[in-house]
Image (cartoon, rainbow, N blue to C red):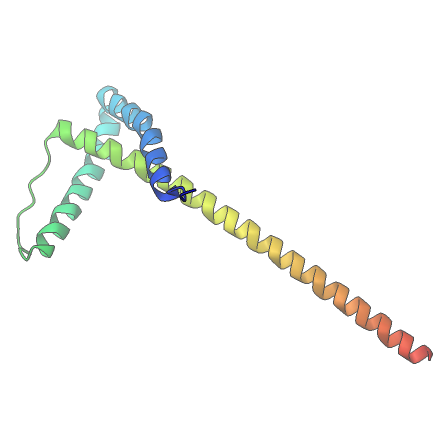
Length: 131
């Protein structure tokens, strides 16, 4: 049986969950100028600026001018970026929580083993003194 490509499955899941969130942000941008002008557009323009700068530097054109995205494209780009960012952040938080929980569980198990070992050693020492 071939191995399940969990990475691809995770990416598809994030994309599927991000779509409704992105759609909600886009609708929110239509209804709220504050959300659009102070959250979505700055994020979109910032991510676009970084993206263009990195790509142009990789191609050897370090001083290329970065043009701003038009408003419609920026709202779409920003909403998608924000929704995927929150999903990845949520997923990372879950992974960190599970890692810490697992580490604490192992630590408790090791403490219990050490405690049992010390108890057995103490009892052996007592038995040797009785003889």
